[in-house]
Length: 183
Image 1: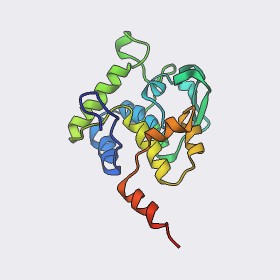
Image 2: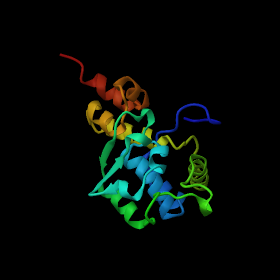
Image 3: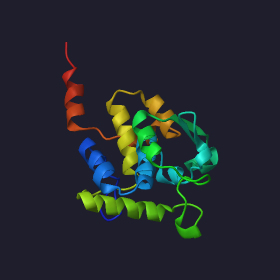
């Protein structure tokens, strides 16, 4: 859990996610931004760099030029939960998350962090960072039994070792793992 900017962002529970998206985030824009981060496992900077043309045919394209490491373009299907969130938010052509009053081309990471901190304060959740949505998404996929190689394609991690550091292992998962051992 993140404390005073140190450590990893908290993995959010289903209840915390529900409360953030119903009570914490106040605008369709805020729900869309963090919904994209959650449902695609992307970094907040990748979501902020999206253009309206990057969302089409039921998928979101994260262009190589806007991804960390700039290794390759990723295309992630839009699941129904994210589609519902995106239907609420109808940005003008150009940057999906434009900056304030024409000062910046797009919303900044600093502002995204402030939006999230304010939302978390409203619902009383601590230890959350913008990276929590990425960690939560990747951990949920892993817990559901999705192969690591598939998660790696979605997340864009260049190696499995880096991806594995993101994933949280719960005490229940450890109990279940050792319970299958025997003869």
